[in-house]
Image (cartoon, rainbow, N blue to C red; front, top):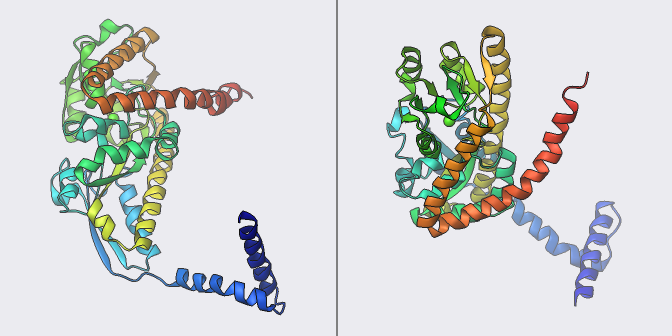
Length: 380
Ligand code: CA
Protein backbone atom coordinates (compact mmCIF):
# COMPACT_ATOMS: atom_id res chain seq x y z
CA UNK A 1 0.00 0.00 0.00
CA UNK A 2 2.76 2.34 1.05
CA UNK A 3 4.62 1.49 -2.16
CA UNK A 4 1.63 2.43 -4.35
CA UNK A 5 1.22 5.67 -2.45
CA UNK A 6 4.87 6.56 -3.02
CA UNK A 7 4.53 5.73 -6.71
CA UNK A 8 1.55 8.08 -7.07
CA UNK A 9 3.47 10.85 -5.32
CA UNK A 10 6.49 10.33 -7.60
CA UNK A 11 4.17 10.42 -10.59
CA UNK A 12 2.68 13.70 -9.44
CA UNK A 13 6.09 15.20 -8.91
CA UNK A 14 7.35 14.03 -12.30
CA UNK A 15 4.20 15.45 -13.84
CA UNK A 16 4.73 18.79 -12.15
CA UNK A 17 8.36 18.98 -13.18
CA UNK A 18 7.45 18.18 -16.76
CA UNK A 19 4.63 20.67 -16.98
CA UNK A 20 6.83 23.21 -15.25
CA UNK A 21 9.52 22.69 -17.88
CA UNK A 22 7.06 23.24 -20.68
CA UNK A 23 7.09 19.63 -21.90
CA UNK A 24 3.89 18.37 -23.38
CA UNK A 25 2.19 16.41 -20.62
CA UNK A 26 1.13 12.83 -21.15
CA UNK A 27 -2.41 11.73 -20.32
CA UNK A 28 -1.29 10.35 -16.96
CA UNK A 29 0.42 13.55 -15.89
CA UNK A 30 -2.55 15.62 -17.02
CA UNK A 31 -4.91 13.57 -14.92
CA UNK A 32 -2.71 13.38 -11.86
CA UNK A 33 -1.78 17.06 -11.91
CA UNK A 34 -5.46 18.12 -11.95
CA UNK A 35 -6.19 17.70 -8.21
CA UNK A 36 -2.99 19.53 -7.39
CA UNK A 37 -4.06 22.51 -9.47
CA UNK A 38 -7.48 22.50 -7.84
CA UNK A 39 -5.88 22.49 -4.42
CA UNK A 40 -3.67 25.42 -5.37
CA UNK A 41 -6.79 27.31 -6.40
CA UNK A 42 -8.35 26.71 -2.98
CA UNK A 43 -5.23 27.96 -1.21
CA UNK A 44 -5.21 31.04 -3.39
CA UNK A 45 -8.78 31.97 -2.41
CA UNK A 46 -8.30 34.73 0.13
CA UNK A 47 -10.30 35.22 3.28
CA UNK A 48 -11.89 38.66 3.18
CA UNK A 49 -14.18 38.66 6.20
CA UNK A 50 -14.06 41.96 8.11
CA UNK A 51 -13.14 41.49 11.76
CA UNK A 52 -12.37 44.13 14.40
CA UNK A 53 -10.94 43.09 17.75
CA UNK A 54 -10.09 45.18 20.78
CA UNK A 55 -6.95 44.58 22.81
CA UNK A 56 -6.45 45.80 26.40
CA UNK A 57 -2.95 46.00 27.84
CA UNK A 58 -1.59 46.47 31.36
CA UNK A 59 0.81 49.25 30.32
CA UNK A 60 0.43 52.68 28.78
CA UNK A 61 0.23 52.07 25.02
CA UNK A 62 3.42 54.10 24.48
CA UNK A 63 5.58 52.23 27.01
CA UNK A 64 8.19 50.44 24.95
CA UNK A 65 9.33 47.72 24.86
CA UNK A 66 6.49 46.29 26.99
CA UNK A 67 3.77 47.57 24.67
CA UNK A 68 5.76 46.96 21.47
CA UNK A 69 4.43 43.43 20.83
CA UNK A 70 0.86 44.81 20.68
CA UNK A 71 1.76 47.38 18.02
CA UNK A 72 3.68 44.79 16.00
CA UNK A 73 0.83 42.31 16.32
CA UNK A 74 -1.83 44.76 15.15
CA UNK A 75 0.29 45.84 12.18
CA UNK A 76 1.21 42.31 11.10
CA UNK A 77 -2.36 41.02 11.38
CA UNK A 78 -3.70 43.95 9.37
CA UNK A 79 -0.95 43.72 6.73
CA UNK A 80 -1.38 39.98 6.30
CA UNK A 81 -5.15 40.27 5.82
CA UNK A 82 -5.12 43.33 3.53
CA UNK A 83 -6.64 45.36 6.36
CA UNK A 84 -9.59 42.99 6.85
CA UNK A 85 -8.65 41.90 10.39
CA UNK A 86 -8.03 44.92 12.61
CA UNK A 87 -6.97 45.00 16.25
CA UNK A 88 -7.64 48.25 18.15
CA UNK A 89 -5.16 48.87 20.96
CA UNK A 90 -6.33 50.21 24.31
CA UNK A 91 -3.57 51.15 26.76
CA UNK A 92 -3.92 51.66 30.49
CA UNK A 93 -4.62 55.35 29.80
CA UNK A 94 -7.88 54.34 28.12
CA UNK A 95 -9.37 51.47 30.16
CA UNK A 96 -7.83 52.61 33.51
CA UNK A 97 -7.57 49.04 34.84
CA UNK A 98 -3.97 47.82 34.53
CA UNK A 99 -4.74 44.66 36.46
CA UNK A 100 -8.20 44.07 35.02
CA UNK A 101 -6.95 42.50 31.80
CA UNK A 102 -7.67 38.87 32.65
CA UNK A 103 -11.26 39.69 33.59
CA UNK A 104 -11.68 41.84 30.48
CA UNK A 105 -10.69 38.92 28.24
CA UNK A 106 -12.51 36.29 30.27
CA UNK A 107 -15.76 38.30 30.04
CA UNK A 108 -15.12 39.11 26.36
CA UNK A 109 -15.17 42.87 26.95
CA UNK A 110 -11.91 42.59 25.04
CA UNK A 111 -11.14 39.72 22.67
CA UNK A 112 -7.44 39.89 23.46
CA UNK A 113 -5.20 41.16 26.25
CA UNK A 114 -1.50 41.84 26.81
CA UNK A 115 -0.13 41.55 30.31
CA UNK A 116 2.09 39.45 32.57
CA UNK A 117 0.95 36.04 33.75
CA UNK A 118 2.33 36.40 37.30
CA UNK A 119 -0.10 39.25 37.99
CA UNK A 120 -2.82 36.58 38.30
CA UNK A 121 -1.09 34.73 41.13
CA UNK A 122 -4.02 35.60 43.42
CA UNK A 123 -6.49 33.92 41.02
CA UNK A 124 -4.32 30.86 40.39
CA UNK A 125 -0.80 30.33 41.74
CA UNK A 126 0.09 28.29 38.63
CA UNK A 127 0.00 31.40 36.44
CA UNK A 128 3.46 32.32 37.78
CA UNK A 129 5.14 29.59 35.71
CA UNK A 130 4.55 31.44 32.46
CA UNK A 131 6.30 34.69 33.37
CA UNK A 132 9.46 33.79 35.22
CA UNK A 133 10.44 32.50 38.66
CA UNK A 134 13.48 33.17 40.87
CA UNK A 135 16.41 30.95 39.81
CA UNK A 136 14.35 29.81 36.80
CA UNK A 137 15.06 29.54 33.10
CA UNK A 138 16.83 32.02 30.84
CA UNK A 139 14.87 33.42 27.90
CA UNK A 140 16.18 30.81 25.49
CA UNK A 141 15.61 27.92 27.86
CA UNK A 142 12.12 29.19 28.61
CA UNK A 143 11.08 29.66 24.96
CA UNK A 144 12.36 26.16 24.22
CA UNK A 145 10.23 24.87 27.09
CA UNK A 146 7.19 26.79 25.83
CA UNK A 147 7.38 25.74 22.19
CA UNK A 148 9.17 22.38 22.27
CA UNK A 149 8.82 21.19 25.87
CA UNK A 150 5.59 21.07 27.88
CA UNK A 151 5.21 24.84 28.43
CA UNK A 152 2.29 25.46 26.06
CA UNK A 153 0.52 22.31 27.28
CA UNK A 154 0.59 23.58 30.86
CA UNK A 155 -0.30 27.12 29.80
CA UNK A 156 -3.47 25.84 28.14
CA UNK A 157 -4.30 23.69 31.13
CA UNK A 158 -3.97 26.59 33.60
CA UNK A 159 -5.85 29.17 31.47
CA UNK A 160 -8.63 26.82 30.34
CA UNK A 161 -10.71 27.55 33.47
CA UNK A 162 -10.83 31.22 32.40
CA UNK A 163 -11.93 30.37 28.83
CA UNK A 164 -8.65 31.86 27.66
CA UNK A 165 -5.98 30.71 25.23
CA UNK A 166 -2.64 32.00 26.51
CA UNK A 167 0.45 32.65 24.38
CA UNK A 168 3.96 34.01 25.03
CA UNK A 169 3.85 37.78 24.48
CA UNK A 170 7.42 39.13 24.62
CA UNK A 171 10.36 38.82 26.96
CA UNK A 172 12.56 41.31 28.80
CA UNK A 173 15.42 38.81 29.05
CA UNK A 174 17.30 38.63 32.35
CA UNK A 175 16.35 41.42 34.76
CA UNK A 176 18.89 43.05 37.04
CA UNK A 177 18.74 42.35 40.79
CA UNK A 178 18.13 46.02 41.49
CA UNK A 179 19.59 49.32 42.63
CA UNK A 180 20.91 49.52 46.21
CA UNK A 181 22.11 52.55 48.13
CA UNK A 182 24.56 50.43 50.13
CA UNK A 183 26.67 47.44 49.27
CA UNK A 184 25.37 44.03 50.39
CA UNK A 185 28.33 42.10 51.80
CA UNK A 186 26.55 39.56 53.99
CA UNK A 187 22.99 38.35 54.47
CA UNK A 188 22.83 40.54 57.60
CA UNK A 189 23.10 43.65 55.40
CA UNK A 190 19.71 42.75 53.93
CA UNK A 191 17.97 42.70 57.29
CA UNK A 192 15.71 45.67 57.83
CA UNK A 193 16.31 47.37 54.49
CA UNK A 194 13.22 48.62 52.69
CA UNK A 195 12.95 47.38 49.13
CA UNK A 196 10.45 47.49 46.33
CA UNK A 197 10.43 43.97 44.90
CA UNK A 198 7.10 42.44 43.86
CA UNK A 199 5.81 38.89 43.47
CA UNK A 200 7.40 35.65 44.54
CA UNK A 201 10.82 37.31 44.84
CA UNK A 202 9.27 39.68 47.38
CA UNK A 203 8.19 36.65 49.44
CA UNK A 204 11.77 35.34 49.24
CA UNK A 205 13.32 38.66 50.27
CA UNK A 206 10.87 38.95 53.18
CA UNK A 207 12.17 35.58 54.46
CA UNK A 208 15.65 37.14 54.51
CA UNK A 209 14.46 40.01 56.67
CA UNK A 210 13.88 42.61 53.95
CA UNK A 211 10.97 44.92 54.51
CA UNK A 212 9.17 44.54 51.19
CA UNK A 213 7.03 47.41 49.95
CA UNK A 214 5.09 48.08 46.80
CA UNK A 215 5.24 51.61 45.47
CA UNK A 216 3.65 52.87 42.23
CA UNK A 217 6.12 53.33 39.37
CA UNK A 218 5.67 57.10 39.30
CA UNK A 219 6.87 57.49 42.90
CA UNK A 220 9.85 55.13 42.80
CA UNK A 221 12.59 57.64 42.02
CA UNK A 222 11.50 60.07 44.74
CA UNK A 223 11.15 57.27 47.29
CA UNK A 224 14.68 56.08 46.58
CA UNK A 225 16.11 59.59 46.51
CA UNK A 226 14.47 60.60 49.82
CA UNK A 227 15.35 57.33 51.55
CA UNK A 228 11.76 56.09 51.95
CA UNK A 229 13.18 52.92 50.41
CA UNK A 230 16.82 51.71 50.35
CA UNK A 231 16.63 49.58 47.25
CA UNK A 232 14.41 48.59 44.37
CA UNK A 233 14.34 46.37 41.35
CA UNK A 234 12.88 47.41 38.02
CA UNK A 235 13.97 45.73 34.78
CA UNK A 236 17.39 46.31 33.23
CA UNK A 237 19.44 49.14 31.70
CA UNK A 238 17.09 49.62 28.72
CA UNK A 239 14.12 50.51 30.93
CA UNK A 240 15.96 51.62 34.10
CA UNK A 241 17.80 54.49 32.39
CA UNK A 242 14.56 56.45 31.89
CA UNK A 243 13.77 56.12 35.61
CA UNK A 244 17.08 57.68 36.70
CA UNK A 245 17.75 55.28 39.61
CA UNK A 246 21.48 55.25 38.81
CA UNK A 247 21.68 58.86 39.93
CA UNK A 248 20.67 58.05 43.51
CA UNK A 249 21.64 54.41 44.21
CA UNK A 250 25.09 53.45 42.93
CA UNK A 251 25.11 49.66 43.50
CA UNK A 252 23.61 47.79 40.56
CA UNK A 253 23.18 44.08 41.31
CA UNK A 254 23.05 41.29 38.75
CA UNK A 255 19.85 39.27 38.51
CA UNK A 256 18.50 36.16 40.18
CA UNK A 257 14.78 36.79 40.66
CA UNK A 258 13.43 37.42 37.14
CA UNK A 259 15.75 35.61 34.73
CA UNK A 260 13.38 35.87 31.75
CA UNK A 261 10.18 37.84 32.37
CA UNK A 262 7.62 36.87 29.80
CA UNK A 263 4.64 39.00 28.78
CA UNK A 264 1.48 37.21 27.66
CA UNK A 265 -1.19 37.43 24.99
CA UNK A 266 -4.52 36.24 26.37
CA UNK A 267 -7.14 35.40 23.76
CA UNK A 268 -10.81 34.77 24.50
CA UNK A 269 -11.32 31.18 23.38
CA UNK A 270 -14.83 31.71 21.96
CA UNK A 271 -13.73 34.78 20.01
CA UNK A 272 -10.78 32.81 18.62
CA UNK A 273 -13.01 29.92 17.56
CA UNK A 274 -15.25 32.34 15.62
CA UNK A 275 -12.31 33.56 13.50
CA UNK A 276 -11.87 32.14 10.00
CA UNK A 277 -9.12 29.49 10.02
CA UNK A 278 -6.80 31.72 7.98
CA UNK A 279 -7.08 34.53 10.55
CA UNK A 280 -6.44 32.09 13.40
CA UNK A 281 -3.20 31.03 11.73
CA UNK A 282 -2.21 34.62 11.01
CA UNK A 283 -2.91 35.66 14.61
CA UNK A 284 -0.83 32.80 16.04
CA UNK A 285 2.07 33.50 13.68
CA UNK A 286 1.98 37.24 14.38
CA UNK A 287 1.86 36.69 18.17
CA UNK A 288 4.90 34.42 17.97
CA UNK A 289 6.86 36.85 15.81
CA UNK A 290 6.03 39.92 17.87
CA UNK A 291 6.83 38.09 21.14
CA UNK A 292 10.34 37.20 19.95
CA UNK A 293 10.85 40.69 18.59
CA UNK A 294 10.37 42.27 22.01
CA UNK A 295 13.37 40.34 23.31
CA UNK A 296 15.57 41.68 20.50
CA UNK A 297 14.27 45.22 21.01
CA UNK A 298 14.97 45.16 24.74
CA UNK A 299 18.35 43.49 24.31
CA UNK A 300 19.34 46.28 21.94
CA UNK A 301 17.93 48.99 24.22
CA UNK A 302 19.84 47.56 27.20
CA UNK A 303 23.19 47.42 25.42
CA UNK A 304 22.74 50.99 24.21
CA UNK A 305 21.53 52.27 27.60
CA UNK A 306 24.29 50.51 29.53
CA UNK A 307 27.00 52.04 27.34
CA UNK A 308 25.47 55.47 27.97
CA UNK A 309 24.97 55.01 31.73
CA UNK A 310 28.56 53.83 32.29
CA UNK A 311 29.94 56.84 30.46
CA UNK A 312 27.72 59.41 32.12
CA UNK A 313 27.84 57.90 35.61
CA UNK A 314 31.17 56.14 36.10
CA UNK A 315 30.37 55.72 39.81
CA UNK A 316 27.83 52.97 39.15
CA UNK A 317 29.19 49.77 40.72
CA UNK A 318 28.01 46.54 39.15
CA UNK A 319 27.96 43.81 41.78
CA UNK A 320 26.68 40.29 42.24
CA UNK A 321 25.35 39.23 45.62
CA UNK A 322 28.02 37.17 47.40
CA UNK A 323 27.52 33.41 46.94
CA UNK A 324 26.48 32.77 50.60
CA UNK A 325 23.78 35.47 50.21
CA UNK A 326 22.63 33.93 46.93
CA UNK A 327 22.50 30.50 48.56
CA UNK A 328 20.22 31.89 51.26
CA UNK A 329 18.00 33.41 48.55
CA UNK A 330 17.89 30.09 46.74
CA UNK A 331 17.07 28.16 49.93
CA UNK A 332 14.26 30.60 50.69
CA UNK A 333 12.98 30.21 47.11
CA UNK A 334 12.93 26.42 47.45
CA UNK A 335 11.00 26.80 50.73
CA UNK A 336 8.41 28.99 49.01
CA UNK A 337 8.11 26.52 46.09
CA UNK A 338 7.76 23.54 48.41
CA UNK A 339 5.03 25.29 50.37
CA UNK A 340 2.95 25.88 47.21
CA UNK A 341 3.75 22.39 45.89
CA UNK A 342 2.38 20.82 49.07
CA UNK A 343 -0.88 22.76 48.65
CA UNK A 344 -1.39 22.38 44.90
CA UNK A 345 -0.96 19.21 42.82
CA UNK A 346 -0.60 20.96 39.47
CA UNK A 347 1.96 23.38 40.95
CA UNK A 348 4.06 20.40 42.00
CA UNK A 349 3.75 18.81 38.55
CA UNK A 350 4.82 21.96 36.68
CA UNK A 351 7.62 22.59 39.20
CA UNK A 352 9.05 19.10 38.63
CA UNK A 353 8.62 19.46 34.86
CA UNK A 354 10.42 22.84 34.75
CA UNK A 355 13.24 21.69 37.01
CA UNK A 356 13.87 18.64 34.82
CA UNK A 357 13.82 20.82 31.70
CA UNK A 358 16.26 23.35 33.19
CA UNK A 359 18.66 20.60 34.15
CA UNK A 360 19.09 19.44 30.55
CA UNK A 361 18.82 22.87 28.94
CA UNK A 362 21.29 24.46 31.37
CA UNK A 363 24.01 21.93 30.58
CA UNK A 364 23.80 23.01 26.94
CA UNK A 365 23.50 26.74 27.82
CA UNK A 366 26.73 26.48 29.82
CA UNK A 367 28.67 24.42 27.32
CA UNK A 368 27.40 26.34 24.29
CA UNK A 369 26.92 30.10 24.48
CA UNK A 370 28.26 30.62 28.00
CA UNK A 371 31.34 28.51 27.19
CA UNK A 372 31.92 30.53 24.04
CA UNK A 373 31.79 33.87 25.91
CA UNK A 374 33.94 32.67 28.80
CA UNK A 375 36.71 31.32 26.62
CA UNK A 376 36.82 34.01 23.95
CA UNK A 377 35.86 37.27 25.64
CA UNK A 378 39.23 38.16 27.14
CA UNK A 379 41.23 37.42 23.99
CA UNK A 380 42.95 40.40 22.40
CA1 CA B 1 11.17 43.55 37.63
